[in-house]
Length: 582
Image (cartoon, rainbow, N blue to C red; front, top):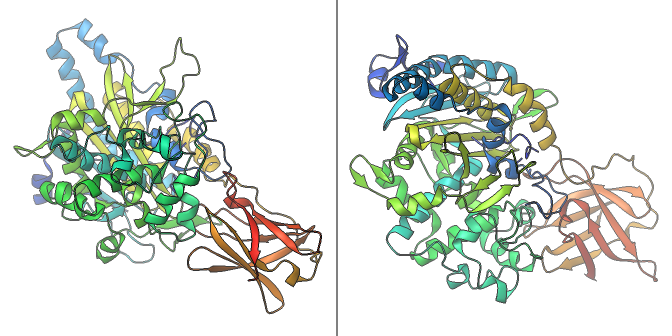
């Protein structure tokens, strides 16, 4: 989804461990040498219009994901001023000693946190990595890559990252900003004249910064419905121009995978490359991220990969997978935990890695700065606003400590999260191969509580489980009515219907039934009559959540002249006029 960002607006959940001896973490290489590596076992609605959320009825899982751990940690009070109090009680050296002790405790208890979250959820597989002071101190795999296979997850297992791809993409673009290929304020239409967001006049002002910060004015999750229908990247990006931006440009936050993708595509075009090649040449290869790719085909070619799983009817099952190439900059990266450790070290070291400046420090730092309020404070006198940078949720905790985070989620079977505390040189990432249920966020929140307080401050599962259950519900009306005889002969509903956004949709008799054919591949689905000129069909894809209504408007001649498809009508684009026979 992109699934999966957040009411989880209210619990934001956007974002290891066994390498510990005598309470102290071992470097990964040493730990592995001693065989210490441990192997264990929708789109949802954004905040409301006028408050950073566009209206619409589609499942918006990615919006909460964008918030990352920010709201979970805020609601749990995960970062208080304990380090400050410690310094007041003693010397700065003593405070650092206390902090080091808490970190050692957190590393020691991390496997416990992981096992508890996996037992609670039943998620099949999980990888976790922790970096500190430019070293990988934990690299673990738990569970299985694929149910029934007997294949264990390890630190080199490749996972689909979903929206955790976004801060990786902004790192790639920062490399181009650093060498002058593009600027954060480069208009996107300079490179993509066909992507005129809000019309050509407004579109000429929309910049890379606007799209990477989700403040372009596009509606929430604009274009995701087209991806589900099978349209390619170029088509989806061009059709963004058809969507109304209202008065939201730079005034409201609305999470958009394809707005973000447009920024990546514009940057790649400026560099004379494809996004997939650019990412590899400017980031993955220089960092030595040997298992990382922005091509789905490369993920499928990995022998050590984690397959996606869904929980259906109370049981985990291998899913049909998620092909995210159309939105590769926003959700198409696959990587191992080991590779993510290298990227986190780059982030925490100002763009330097093992003595080389791979990304200009100033350009990378800009991705870490707030660019847009993502969630206004409930009480401005007491609560901070939630903010979004360039591919990052940016939070501030006492005493003015920056925390960066992001989550990723595919309803079809992936959930990931990352959190960085630059002032402590600390980062953690958790990757899973199951439908989003808050597992990465639960592990990270508990770990960071231990780092800051020496104890877990609250029951995060109790907060996250109901929040994610709500997030995974579709945001279009699910048809529950029983079948009923159609009001007219089926051929009266048949025809080709079209609008500029969805293109042509065919409704045609097939045997003694009616089918609807959607998208460029004319994917077919049966239409079940409900009476009153209404039918239902079962959508497929990342944002499908159950049967959707298809309602026909009958003209004076007793034949259908228009149709509305509920699950595609979030921005009013599911209404199509009859243009001819099927």
